[in-house]
Image (tube, rainbow, N blue to C red; front, side, top):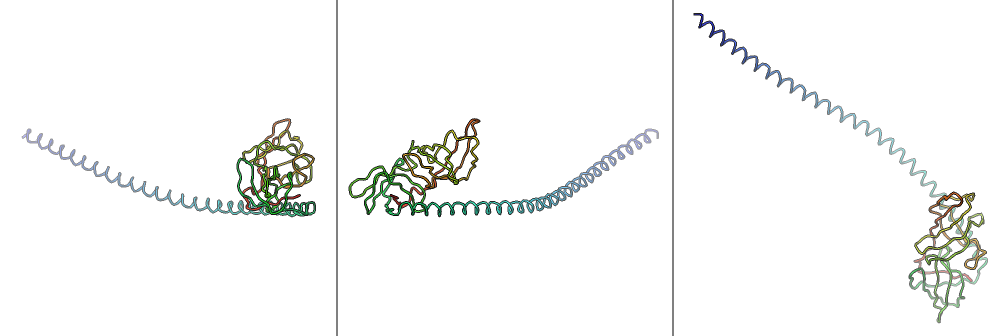
Length: 245
């Protein structure tokens, strides 16, 4: 009888353990399901918050962009007005000083030298400008039948005085043949900034005064001086040039 009781108790214990194990397993599964649901809810909530933050951010960003582009537009308009005013001034001065201007046809160019032809007689040393009256270069040689060799601002080592819109001489400009012009040893007290337009200052053997040369695109402050980089604004690929003489 005692053996039977022991066996019965042992079976009950085993059944209890099995039941307890199944109960814990079911409990774990329910906990896991609950935890996964919690994670899903948390992920959904996070996505919603991100979308809300993103919408608010881009709304502000778009507003800033609109203001930024409007400011750029206004600056561009001011710059364009400055250039147009300078063009008109330059054209007026050139027409007054050089009433016998001659048109020339661009034939081809290489290494900063432009070859052109004119219908009328042209003098060596005459100044060449484009259709916008911006400086191109100078007639270096006249061949038979009025074929012209023009040395342009894309030719290296041309040196001439350059100045600002107020007529102040800034320094000695030097062409590089690389698409830009350098002005070295500029007085550090000279106020100049990128975007400024520069003209020939005269008082040299190359170009007379008041011809539009180009625009400042870079300035290096070297302590005792400034170095200015200028990009020429002339249309060197134009089909037509104007010879002023």
